[in-house]
Image (cartoon, rainbow over all chains, first blue to last red; front, side, top):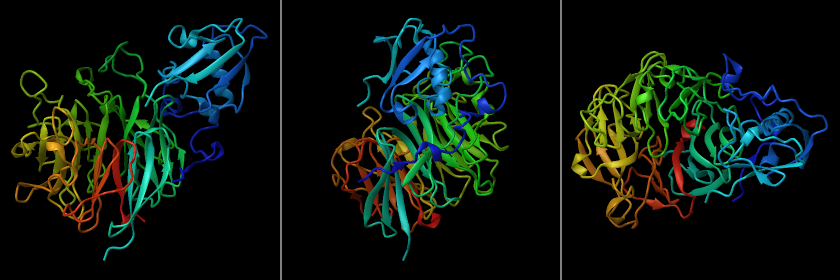
Length: 135
Length: 374
């Protein structure tokens, strides 16, 4: 049996271009549409190498990506801005990392500690993976 | 002789499968399959738009998605997936941080709207959320009157989560709808969702202390009678029930069966006054006595009949809330999917049964795309 094809991103309906998946974001005050941290200044030249899980690469960059950011939240904002289909996959609509997502900053897992608030100042590489789970 | 193609739409722990058969329901072909590796809680055909299927796809890692196929499941694409709506009331059940948005955990049930509203679809999700899309899934509006119900702080999730799993629309009136929420019960609206009345009178709550409350019943699934839209059959945590008055009152019918626990129920279009239940052991949540069995309720004679010959299919089978479906042919086809991946088929209203020779992943849901929908 051959699995049915999943249509490529360009044929996906909805609001890919604007990255809006919810009515909360389309209408009303939309508190579900989380925002980046506006008070953190990105240090100039803090370019990071981001590596995504093979599953996430279907929705994001096909290989590693260079992103400028001072926190994990800012990094995800930037990535989602470039690749709208990544939105709500790594973080849920409250802005938190999904429970089975692991973010490594220079090899250190920050998912269970500082999470999206983890500082990237001085960091060089980020890995975003899914955790070992399921069965 | 009936003509056309019957499609069994199977949502599993590892993806969606479409099983294609002839109208005699003797020859079956497996495929296409999709959503590999994803938990698919429900797959449904939209009879208003032949060829269109919707799937409630829940990825353990990357969250839920509403997916749609326009070609009977050969290819799929994500339509818009609703997000948790803005919170308006202070306290919800299970609140760890009162007032903070609780993200949508899983999508449970997709219901195509009334034929008079061909672009409307409904979606039930965890945590106890109901959404309506007026444009076939492009945008979603949360139905506040249920999502922000004043009693919400008293609700609680069931073992499967805080799922809103049953959505039924009166075929005579698009504004009259019924919903079922795990560990909360059933509700009816007469005004298109602007207000909801709990409809659980007569349904026992052996798991709660004190007198039977207005809500708190753990409904597992409800189906409407095909000929009488005021009649409903209900599989509840507290047993099997029938209502003849739009769910205002429920009568327990399962008592003669002994343990009348279970999760699923279906009533065939071609045989009004009939409902099929899969009885499970209340303790073990598998078919009792060590064999696959289906019970037929005859609402005209108010009697039960066991359909499957004892020990025809030995084993202890689990069947979930969307695990049984019936087609609209005569005699009715009955389809039962198990949590261990067996798909049982009866082409003749339960007279004979076949176990399809294909091992699926654990089955969450079974539904049927009828030949008339082509």
